[in-house]
Length: 261
Image: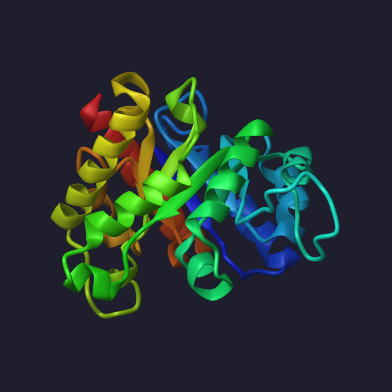
């Protein structure tokens, strides 16, 4: 199980250091957290804070991730950053194809596929985001949309183990619309994603890939969502910016894995 915080374009260096220090202190008391435990934890800050936070979090059980990257090794791509640069400052994860990147910056499934392969070539784990919009959900096209994103985003990808890839399901229709995705709706889509992963990668690998829920997971709904059999963690937005809230979700994940063990 993985709990990953997406800090988006928030927190200057002082605030980022304070939050990272609070998280390091907080996770030390949570049983089963860390690469050798039942629950992996990651934070994905803005690029300019990654190096400083790696120094604070290294050895704590909290890994560092990035929010995006370019698919090229290097070149004349002003404003972009490469996989090798991220790896050099300690990134283990990179978020790709987030709904905001798709909507605001025009990223396509093909872009996601190229970046995911590049991330894996540099020994980083891509967190590939998929999800349908409100009009797609209302039209009953959710599986068609998510299925296409998986087909195109994971095309030509091969895995030697389930921990080389993470999928994050974002029900875009349930974020900021006043509508809520129920645990049952989340599980239904996660089960669909699971079936597609098994079809592509086989039972042993596809059955073990973590599928995160990215639809506004908070302390008050985390336990119910994480109790679903195919919800293997969360990609956390706003709640990841508050130490108490993020730690509460981490604790809920630890309790969920303890109960299923």
